[in-house]
Image (cartoon, rainbow, N blue to C red; front, side):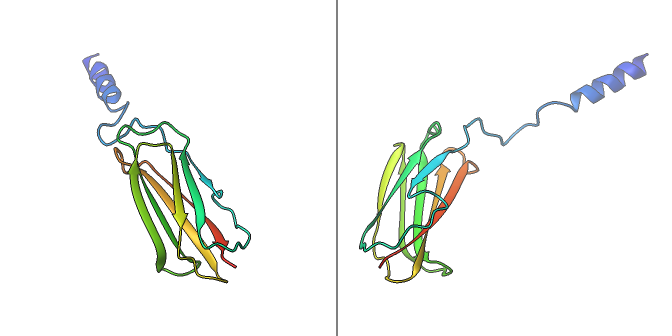
Length: 128
């Protein structure tokens, strides 16, 4: 009888939540304008607006928003901007866009409190 009790005790202690590391934050939900995944029609520019809106509950210490722009297929950014904020709606202006090529904007939003709570999105556009 004590063997059954002991094995039940060992089995029940191995079940349940694991300790350490997790976060209770709501996963980031972000909306871009222009929309993530979109391919914008060529525009004259020279400046291109971007709005990043945090739709989920804001993490306690806010978020870091990283915006980069480069020629599609290139690894060299012509535009980079990073902000740390607790504001839900954030406006950026992409400047320095080269003409007549497809350009890609990448946006990464990361919780300041929990770096594993991250959202990424991108879209393409071109300057006439």
